[in-house]
Image (tube, rainbow, N blue to C red; front, side, top):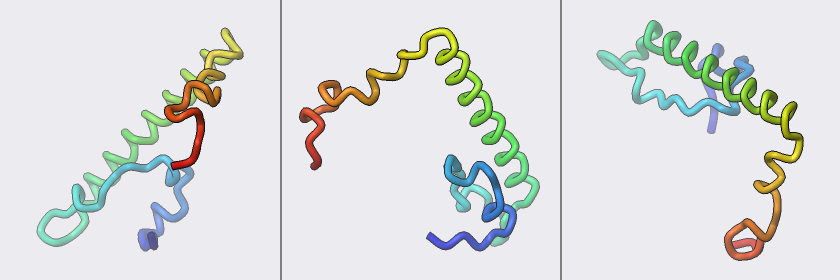
Length: 80
């Protein structure tokens, strides 16, 4: 996917972004106010998710190991 929007291309949150540009179109143009509002909200959500992740890891360092345990992956960890 080619990212033409300069603001998006240089954004620290781009790898976590789920904003679809079709949501931003108004009168055949991108609504920059809506885009800025959605970006701001998404970045806040991402930051909060990382803060919670760190908070949990500080209190229980092995809390997320179950996510990477192959026996918990459907199909025994085999590639599909």
